[in-house]
Image (cartoon, rainbow over all chains, first blue to last red; front, side, top):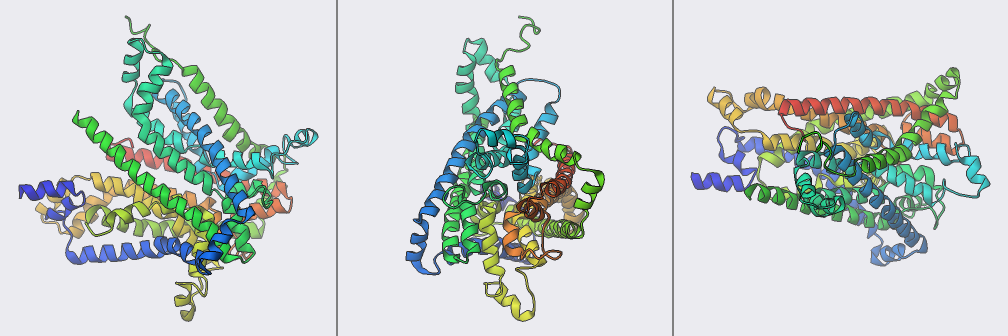
Length: 296
Length: 278
């Protein structure tokens, strides 16, 4: 019995199945899993499989030729560029915000935390629209930008801005609760032992939050590369210039080039799968980190 | 060393808070305020007629109705999935668990065209339903399917940690007092899950209301029938009707703020009820 309990603890869900008080009958288990997994299959798994099935429907040759189209390559480049700017900026922001919020007391802190989460509750379409209102031809800076021949809307800068907006909270919201829970004792000890602020930050704070940081970066990157609505509003859809991969998928789809649309989409689906795999790995490592920390 | 001298041992408060506020203002707050400042430049009649035009009202009904229904469906099946994932062992459990987050990772445009391919008349599921006279893609039902997809992880991911941390003692006590499993679930487990379930529901609903990418491919976008509110904003922008687009965006923003406050209150309730801060 003792061995069974230990074994069940190791297996997580198993602990509920060996305990008679929490064990459901076989029929309940079959019914719950049957219904739940059918739902999972219909609404989650089938769409994922469909992307790859449709992409290869006309054969591997069509698939690969769709991916090496110049327009496809330029869409890939723009997507990578937008993510390469948005993710580091939001990373710096996340670290700064978490440092201020977790290590110091100041009035209005809860309001600040709520405001940081704000972009998550704004519709992507509205997120795009706000930059049109600021930088568009009829917007606040429209006439000035026109006079100085600077293009933001329907050009790369607006795509980057919209991407930054929709991915704004991802890293901050992973770091803030963790750094708040960790407190500031370790940093204060480092400072009182003579370490500089930068040394303390790099040698004490960063190692303590590295898994949460990585977790935030992974999710931030996935959204940055996949954003559609906000980018669609500000892009102008100029082929080879202002199309990101999701926008290019839409154009191909609307031109009835289904195989090509799904081929590009399959790259994004692969990115999603890699994201989920990395995320699961980081969650596992972070848990291990916590467990080992408790053991010491 | 007195406590007063040591009040702020750590450096960088001014720098980090300053940067946070400037970045937040430049990227989020100032651009968002443009929506309200531009709307306030309109006359009240102009604003009111823009946000209450019949086509716009029909889009609210569809957007909110379908979002509500999708969140309800996800609450029921999400609870079932969370239960299955935490309480039972079965082959492939870890893979299913990891894939639950797919809607967070899969770009919405990809989800949109994939769902359309499946639910169209000649698709894997559409072709099964077509002989029965059921049409999903290119109508309001398509909107519902897309919103179910994007909202699926929320309830699972809010309920799952609560279920995992739930002490078995409560159910043991219920069993020793003679309650059967169903009674124990209804009277002991479910009330504990309720705050998390409501939070997940609210998050799924809030996400669905603003959703654009996954919906527009499968909806068919027929005015008055299957046209969602975010699409109306885009259509107005394409017709250079900036005022109309801004007015509707202001309505959507106010609704997002209200949803954000509700979710925050629910999460506070959840933390209070469950005695945890995560």
